[in-house]
Image 1 (cartoon, rainbow, N blue to C red):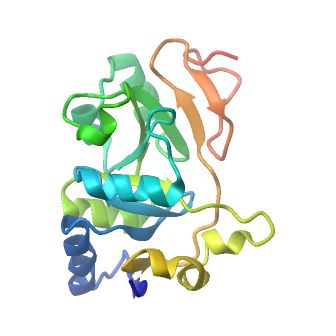
Image 2 (image 1 turned 45 degrees about the vertical axis):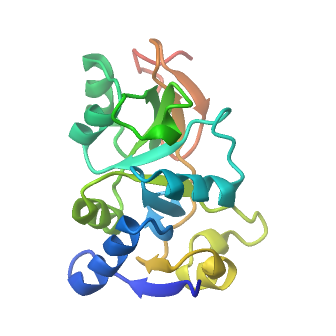
Length: 212
C-alpha cells in the first residue's frame, strides 16, 4: 500500500477523485478520511472483510466494544438502528454534531455488527465525509486514528498522517486540518440516557432524557 494523498474540496470537488475514493471503498479497501472529530479509518460498513480489517488495525474486540457507523442523515440511522421517537427527536433537534449514540442494532447491519446488540451511530458533519457517504450510498464504519498525546497532529494533519499511517491504507483523503476532538458518547439503549464518555459534544444541565 502506498497511502496516496487525495485532496478533496467539498465546495468544489473533483468528482474524478471522489469516485476513486468511492470505488476503492466499494472494492473493500480501507481509507483514512476527515471527520468532525479528527481523522479516522473508514470503510463501507456493509463489507464484512473491510470492517474486520479496521478492527485488526485498531485492535478492536467486537465482543466487547460497539463498532461506530457514520451516517449521512437521520433517515439512514433509522434504517440501520432501532430508534424510538423520543431518541430521534433528541438527536435531530440538539445533538447531531460531536456525539456518538449507542443504539440497538437493526438486522440490516452486516454480520460483523450482529455479534453485538448495539452499534455506535454518528452523523457526518464534516463536508468531505458527507460527500463521500453521499456518493457511496451506504454508511461508513469508522474508527478514529490513535491519539499521540505528545504529537496530536498525527491525527489531524493529513501529510503527517500519510507519513505515519500511509503503509496501512491505499488512500488518505486530505480534507484539510481536522482537529482531534473525541465525541461525547451517549448510551441511548434505555431512558434516561447515560453519558459513557464526555467529549466535544456539549451536554447542558437541562436535558430531560439524560441521567446526571
